[in-house]
Length: 249
Ligand SMILES: [Zn+2]
Image (cartoon, rainbow, N blue to C red; front, side, top):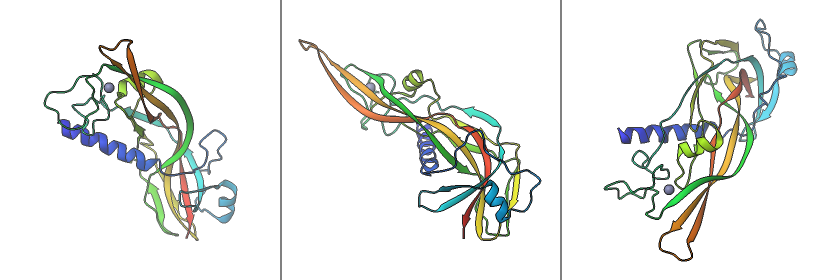
């Protein structure tokens, strides 16, 4: 069970990381001009009028045609993490060494505390594909029953626990968010492009430092030493919308 949980956590982190490698995407905010639902053919004039131009991580131009704002769905949270559950040993809650553990967990026999310091944040506009790419002339369809899963990316280093971070930031760390269920979109990819339907969203990325303060026993004067580890955690996705993403062939 513990190994299984670790796997889930690792997988969630991998997924989260893969989601966020996309560099630029259109701003998800109010004022977006959505394509009327009754427009079937994506002509060059339509692209000109509704298309938002951005660049992917490889420098390719991406054109996004916003289709419709999306409803928010559900959030499922990960269980908190402690050294028994987390194989790479970077995170713990209590400060005791688990029995029989020989792997390099973060632990210390020296009494210490973990504190969130140097908080900062920035806004990330990113996306999650809702369909595969299709070539010109083919139809891309985001099925009604298909839910988009957003796994909020995070990196907790140096032994700070999920619950400590959540308490300090007031967010759910590593939440899994369901979006776009019971919404369906279908478009024919225009000539000269390959296209897919994508779920665009905005989230706040919180960056902070885990300050670990070791209080050394039997030292006069009292010796306290510090370690600093960079961490981050993404907040919930917001301002989500579906769009037709086009890349020139
Ligand atoms: Zn610790």
